[in-house]
Image (cartoon, rainbow over all chains, first blue to last red; front, side, top):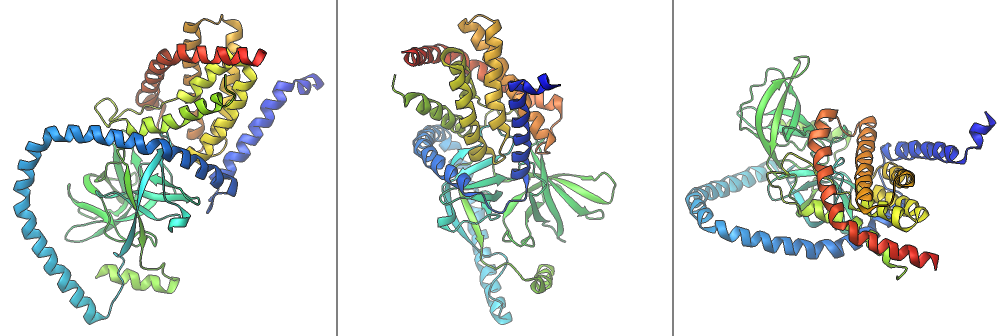
Length: 294
Length: 171
């Protein structure tokens, strides 16, 4: 037995396994903020990363532009066809907006769950082992970014801010597997159905929208958007379209497979969305729910 | 050899991994497979074999910590696995002869072990629910092929660089 403990390498191994478990336990805790050494390392590394990734991205962008040129003719034809439709839609939207504002004025209702301030950011790094699906962007605490803010591209929601340091922040994509990563969502239809985006099917490349009522009738192709009920995200951010609906394990609720409208892989410019409406107090929450019903 | 060259070189590999994943086009081969570049650890393996074992393990430790803090935000996994793999490779190379082909093969085995280790750890802490056959076909094989290609290309330059470094150390 004494000999067993005298083996230096074995002791080093055992001690390092203990440290490993302790560290993993520490980082899996529900941490609101990173410790300052972590923030320091992140900022410094982020700075070095951005030195390299900016030129690399611009070169890649140039090549992509060249490829785009080849498709321009076909694209142009298609876009022209859509343009006619757009003019009509625009007029309609304008009219609706105006009407909405007037109605709101009558009700004396100023802020809505929909309003938000976007902040532009550029992706400077991406986790190379794609187990955690994290992006690192070049805006941080000094630019007013906070944890849990929604992150979108022009096409739709891609994730949320996981942690911030002074000059960089880390974005967790919707495709990351994390039980804490839930988004309250609505399936738009004649009647709205609420559910949660929980998880991602890596084989099918689809998001899972769970906890839809068992009697909800959901068709393929219906839009899924954020509901704004989850306190942090604003309403009406596009998530995707329903592809398939299946009853869940116990038949009590349904699960919809949602094809994300934003490309969750090819991301270089993002917007971090700050909801204008302040987080409601507990007493306010009932009011908000009534709003949704309307 | 400049004493700053080694850390700068490894830092470059550290950055290139992320740039590689970021710029890899979403094409037909990559659409449902996940290619993980492991350039940094391959360089560390070559450093361990051709340069100095101690340096290899220390750099594995430092860059493992950096990797954890910057990329994954779960401290410990790479911090533990990078030095361990560097140590394992140095042990394997004691039995085998230091031939560039053999070192390349051993470094790929090291990458495979690292990939398996990371998968197991992520599975344990419920960061993934991918089952093993999926893991092998979606991640493991594409990753091995990518890194094999890299280590074949980079083997000779890395070997020369680290041999110079070893000479520099003995002086």
